[in-house]
Structure formats: structure tokens, C-alpha cells
Amino acid sequence: MEQQDEGMSLVEHLTELRKRVIWVIAVLIVGMVIGLIFAQPLIIYFKTVPPANTINWNVFSPGDSLRMYMNFGLLVGLIVTLPVAMYHLWAFLKPGLRVEEQKASLMFVPFAFLLFLIGLAFGYFVVFRMAFIFTSSISKNLQLTETYGISQYFSFMFNIIIPLSLLFELPIVAMFLTKLRILNPMLMRKLRRYAYLLLVIVAAVITPPDATSMILVFLPMIVLYEFSTFLSGFIYRRQLIRDKEWEDDKS
View (cartoon, rainbow, N blue to C red):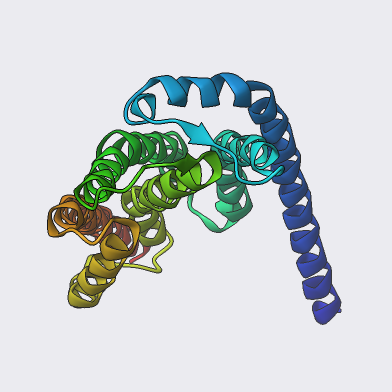
């Protein structure tokens, strides 16, 4: 009978997970539709601001224009879906958290969304523009004619800003995992050298082969990691205090 109860509990758990995944997918579809509606004004906006306002866009295949609509639809859909997906993740994990942990972890959702937007802005206005200027200067030094395809232009942009925006979620992820007692500041300090190496690789991949560009990306990543370690330590110390108070009350 006990095994049957555990089986039913597992089935109910999986059913709840399926419902929440369906909700997230539904919001993603709605967000993609919104993105498709606003794709044209967004593309025109990017065409009128630096660095795109100094170049001419071209299409090299019949599918380039459609691909741009779909890419913008997907990007807007992901932005709209992110806070909803984070909320459902919190709601799914909520039964395993204490009451005070439930309230505190719920606050992660708006801050995670805000950090994602800050990462997008930093990636576009700083890193992408700097990378584009660098690559464009190389073309001019080689006396090459700059003929840019719209698909290649936005692929270059998305490959920079999306990984950076996800990396800006690192403090929230560290806080959330510390709340769940999966991560702690001691582990983050122990893994620091490996994390730095990984961040160097990421910075080298998403930026052009230029030391200045890589350093400009790598330094904010280091700040994010150390800030994440600090936040993890803050939460970890509060957990130790609460655990001690609980043990004192129990005794």
C-alpha cells in the first residue's frame, strides 16, 4: 500500500510538471505571435540606429527575410516566456521549500527577468557594437567592400547578446541553488579557477579575436561570478542561523 501511495504521488508530480510545461509552451507561442507582429518595426528600428545605419543590408536567398521574421518572433517569445517559465519553475519546487524560502525565492523571478534585460542591453549597446566596429575596421584596412546580408548581420548579433544575457542570470541561479542547498559559497570559491577558465573561453567565443573586446566582456563576467559568490554566502549564513535557531527550539 505504501508503494502504491508513492507511485500515485510520483504520477501526480509528473502530471503537475506536464501542466506547467504546457503553460510555458502556450505562452511561448503567444509571445512568438507577438514577436511576428512587431518584427517589421523592430527590424526597421535596428536599421536606423548604429552600427546598421551606416551599411546596406542585402538578402542572399529567398528565405532570408522569412528567417528574420521567425528569429525575431522567437526572440520576443523567449523574452515574454522567461518570467512565466521562472514562475512555474518556482511553483513546481514550492512544496519542497519552507514558508520563508517560498516567499524569498519568489522574489527571484522579477530580478532574474531584470538581469536578463540588462544582459541584452549590455550585449547590444556595448559588446555587439564594439565587435562590429572592430570587424568592420579590419575589412576597411584590407580594402574590402562591406556587403552584409541581413541574416548574417542578425546572426552575428544574436550570437553575442543571447549568451551574454543568459550569463547575467548567474547571480540569480547561484542564489536559487543556494536556497535549495545544492550550492554554497565554499563550493563556488573552490571552483573559482575552473569558472574563470570557462568564462575566458566564453568571452573568446562570443567576441572577435581582439584582446580589448575579450577583456571588456570577461571583466563583467568576473564581477558577476564574485557577486554571485557573495550572494550565495549571504543566503548560506542566514540558512545556518535559521538551522541553529530551529535546533535550539527543538532541544
